[in-house]
Image 1 (cartoon, rainbow, N blue to C red):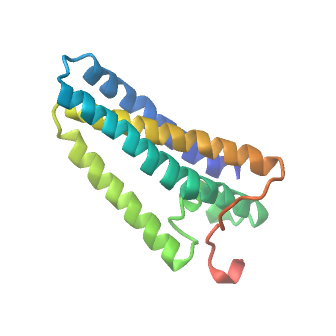
Image 2 (image 1 turned 120 degrees about the vertical axis):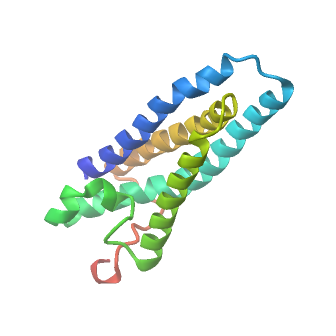
Image 3 (image 1 turned 180 degrees about the horizontal axis):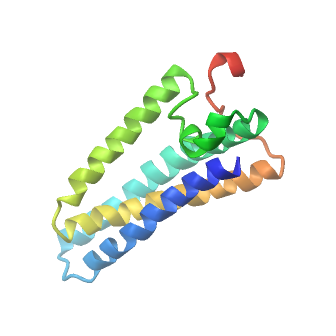
Amino acid sequence: MVWGIAGVVLFLAYAVVRLIPIAIEALRMDLDPLHWVSLGISVASLGYYEGYRAFQKAFSPRTVARGFAIAADPRPLHVILAPLHCMGLFHATKKRAIVSWCVLLGVTGLVLVVRVLDQPWRGIVDAGVVVGLSWGTISMLIFWARALAGKPIPVPPDLPEAVV
């Protein structure tokens, strides 16, 4: 459980740490009103859609639920690949696996597109991503602490039917 959830948290935190300097670089530039409005939209929309809707409402609690599922049934492959298991990339319902892989590939594609943007646009987008990922990381830690305290996790782990 610890390796799975902590692995995902570390992955997210690493992305935040890498993106902060890019966002700060953009903020140090001479931004015009369009840039400031875009920054506000990026931070607000990615904070809400990525941080709250995607992470807090679904990904974070499900990651924790899947981490606890590994602890309850510690199969060697699941333990070794626990962060990937917690992300729903394998040993999941068909729908969960498809959604998880599509999200992973979609995010990877967006990262590649955003990387080619010039500053300040890249930093504007990355500032929103920092807010969303930070929100997601914090929400995951809160769900983990609550689960350790015995509080129920509000989403199912989406494991294959045979092991539910």
